[in-house]
Length: 252
Ligand SMILES: [Zn+2]
Image (tube, rainbow, N blue to C red):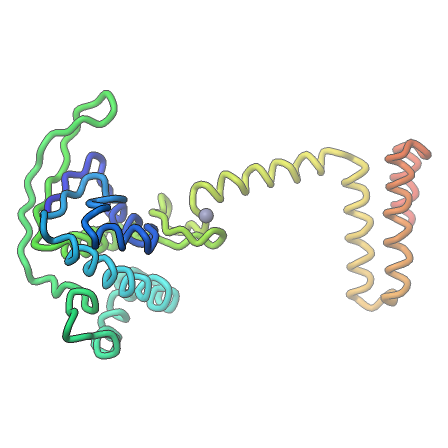
């Protein structure tokens, strides 16, 4: 099992392992998918089934780490302690003697051979590690442990569920969702730059506040809100001027 990462950053392999579909895991097991999803990993010929088994076990245990242990703890180290504390029990539940590689994490006692080679990265020639690992599972675990060490362990996107390698320690959304969120925020900024929409928002906000403080009843608030939206409609239709609209809403 050799990994020659073109621009390998700790956590990349873990994300790839957690994000690939079950169908692709199956394709790796059949030898058809070879290294699909892991561009720089060469899998020993003849060990395709074992690699898929490693992948299955890794996904179960590391998801458990990320979703059950990490939220309880304040740091990566505490999370790993919590994980190690729960591990024996988890292994007891998952272990199947007929398929140990599929049901246990690698024990981590096997040796790695790490050398450095040069590789093309775009127009540049860069120095990259070439890792020879005893098994695919060992390689994945090495990637995950390095990610923990560098405080960049993958997180699950709160919006789309994809696992991603955070650039800053506390990031809840993957790059795609953040880009989408930015588009949405700029749309709502556009809305705020529309003075009529801003006036409507201020007026309805005041009504909700008054209602929540018990100064007006639900029924009264509904009447005022209806009036706000009705007058906004009148303004949009050109029946009243912007100044008149804003002035009227301010009085409601
Ligand atoms: Zn996302």
